Length: 390
Image 1 (cartoon, rainbow, N blue to C red):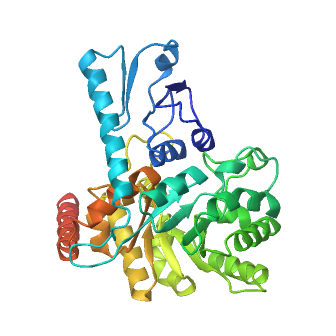
Image 2: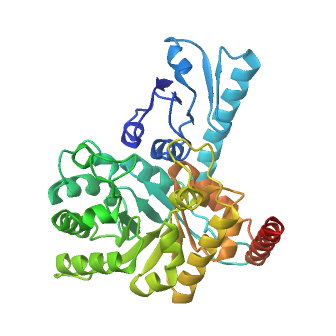
C-alpha cells in the first residue's frame, strides 16, 4: 500500500502493479487523482489527515475504497472480508471479459454504447478487454503536468500512438488539453483560466495538438472534444483551427464538454455547431453547487439543480440528432445510470475497471421504466422546491 500526503493524477497512472491500495492525508473524492484510481480499480482513501503519515512500513492495514475508510491493525475477520472483496472484483473482471462479446442493449432493444475513459495504454487495453466499444474520453493533459512549455506536435504524437494504435476502426474521443485547477503545469502556474480558454490564448499550441491528434488517429473513428466550454465562440474557433490542420483530409467529429452551468444552459445554441456532446458530470456538479472538487466528500449529481442542467443538455443533443455522451463519474453510478438513460444519453464512458459492470447493468434496464424514473425524480424535486419556496 502507498501512503502519501497527496498525489497528482499522473502519479496514480504511473503506479506499478505492486501497489494494491492508496491512503492520502489530503485530497478529495472528486479530485482527478481519485478518478484515475477508480478507473484502474485501485482502492484509494483520501482526506485522512496527517495521522495517516505515521503508518510504519509493514504495518497491516485495510484500504476500503468503497467505504472511504482505512483500518489499521485490522482484525482477522476484517482482513478476510477485504480479501473476499478483492476476489469478488477479480471475478467480476473475469466475467466482464468473458461477456465482452454481448451487446450493451437494454431489455427493450435500445443500444447504449459503453466506452472507456483513459489516460494510459493500460486503461485502453483493460477497457477493450471488458467490451468497451472505444474510448469516450482520452485525457491528454496528465502526461504533461511537469511540462515547462506547451507540448509540441511530436510530443503529442509520442503520447497518443500507444493508446490510439489499439483502436483501429473504433471510436477514439481525444480531449484537448484540460490544464488548470489540480492539473496545472509549472509554465501555467500564474494562469487562472482552465481548459479551452488557456488553449485559445496559445493558438500555436492548439494547432500543434490538433495536428498531432489528426495524424495519430487516422485509423480510428476520431472525435475531438473541447474542454470547459462556456460559449459558442470557443467552439467556432476550434472548428476553424481544425479545418486548417485537416486540409489534406476530412476533419474529425468535433464535440464539446458540457461541464459548466453556462454550457448546459446554452446547449441548444452550442449543438448547432457540434457533432456530439459529452457531459462532464464531475465539474458540472461542483460548479453548479459551488463545491471544491479537491476537498469535496461527495458529488451529488442527483441534486435538483444539477439534474435539471443535465436534462437541458440531453434534450438539446437529442433534438439536434447528435450523440449524447456522459463521461463523468455518474456514468458508472448504478443509481444514476437509469436516470441518464431515461434522460436520453446514448453513450456512457466509464473507468476501465467498470466497463463490464456498466454493460451488464445496461442489459438489465428498460427504457420506459428509466423515463418514468426520471419523471418521478423531476416531479419530486419540483414539489420539494415548491415546499422550500413556500
